[in-house]
View 1 (cartoon, rainbow, N blue to C red):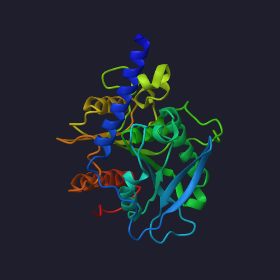
View 2 (cartoon, rainbow, N blue to C red):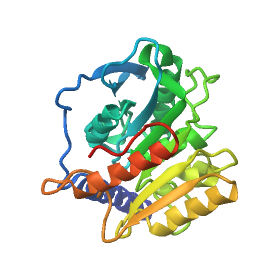
View 3 (cartoon, rainbow, N blue to C red):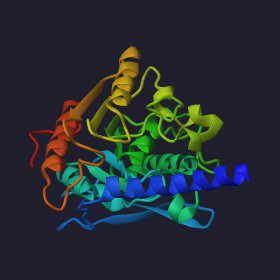
Length: 299
């Protein structure tokens, strides 16, 4: 009887968490389903367990035939339970206008595929491998590839760069998934047992293999970490710890904390796009500092 009660409360707690994530990440947000004047290229990057996984790409205007362009890959948030590629469509449209190839990646989540975060990481890494293997035809510069995402999507972005051991067995594992920079929006980077660890119990005993902050090593890519100080899921202390570990291995890490802002504040809202514009300009300047784009922000 006791185990039944414990299982009941565990399942109920998970349901409440999914509901909370849906409200905090998507409530009052205004996601775009298209970018006016821009054509989208949809590609299948993976078929696994009868699931067909796709990505959507936007390109700079007037792409030159033999030219390769810096690329930014976006992963949406949703606690590995749900979400939509539309979350970062506005950012994708903007950075395509700034001369980058931009990519919106779909991946397996619990609500649609009954999967765990481990499958999500495998899909995120499969997407990077696909892009690298098809770089020539997609005009991608593999030496200037950025991974980005929000919340659980930020976890996936960090995962492709930092986690060596979680991979799809059918992938071409000779293709490295490391990227040259990370842009993390209130990202889940700590899955450990401590106070800042996110859903540690869901990760199980193998959490060290899937927790980005525990896998920061020399050579970790330059990172921009964006967070609100009222985020109820990701404490500012986690971002500061991430930066301290990056500093310790000699890697660049900038943490931007916005006063009074909660989880998902960087997306357009129904009533304002203020923080979308502020954070997108900051990302623009970060990428410009790396030499990936030129000139001043255009929004």
